[in-house]
Image (cartoon, rainbow, N blue to C red; front, side, top):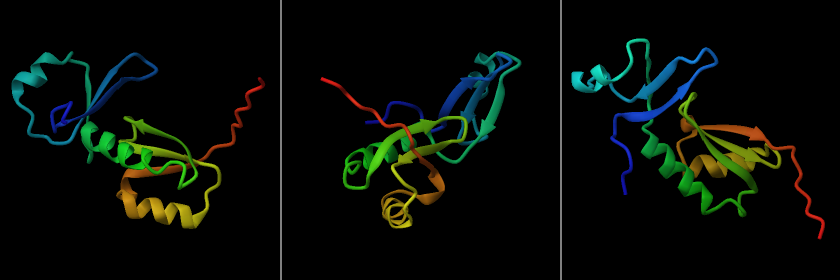
Length: 117
């Protein structure tokens, strides 16, 4: 189910408080652009937020099998961040078979969570 318009890829505020919006096309209706503050920074990117969410959800189903520790959407980079126990090339290749390798950034996750009970 689609949550966002195909043109919408995310938004964030930078360290100076400027609003950034990410769009997938330059063909945005003028009415929409007129709603944005005049100092808004517009970035044109490849993946809509819905596409990134679908990619993330595809991986969530296989987190244990692929030794994925965490998955996040990074709107600034317009990519999925995949945190792995180790940056094992065979695991990376398996993930690249599931989702577009250009849409993912791999990171080694060093944090160990321990529960004492």
